[in-house]
Length: 160
Image 1 (cartoon, one colour):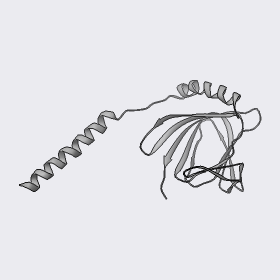
Image 2 (cartoon, rainbow, N blue to C red; image 1 turned 30 degrees about the horizontal axis):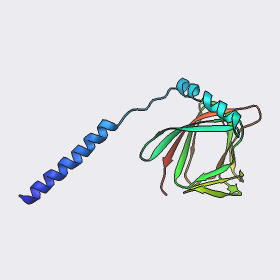
Image 3 (spheres, rainbow, N blue to C red; image 1 turned 45 degrees about the vertical axis):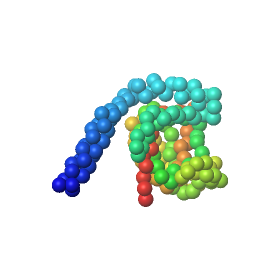
Image 4 (tube, rainbow, N blue to C red; image 1 turned 135 degrees about the vertical axis):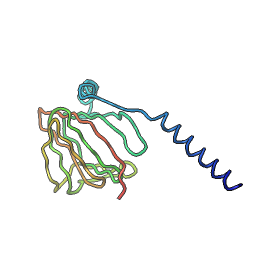
């Protein structure tokens, strides 16, 4: 009898937790037009700063989404615990992957930045392309003079 009561209480706790999670779950939907409109302020920030700007759109338990704009090349980077997925919304760039980060510095837990990526593979990307960069892979986004790129980013926690 006592075991049955404990089992019933455990079931109630599990189902009430699932119910609470279901009530807080929501759908996030952004159209390309909405993202490009939202990116206009990022373009202004990039012009006032170092040529790039980004913002976090939403955080979830094991990933988060961002919107990014670049009018200049970025430095090399490596995320030890997060994969990057880019959806190119507008413009074009070159993504360098592999190789090694030059003059690397640890800027946070699992986050390395540097001057550039040396010895990587170059891929041209343009509007409509999707890029997946696994956790632990050095990468860099290069933007040619006069070009810009706007992209949606999913940063997904990835354990190895």
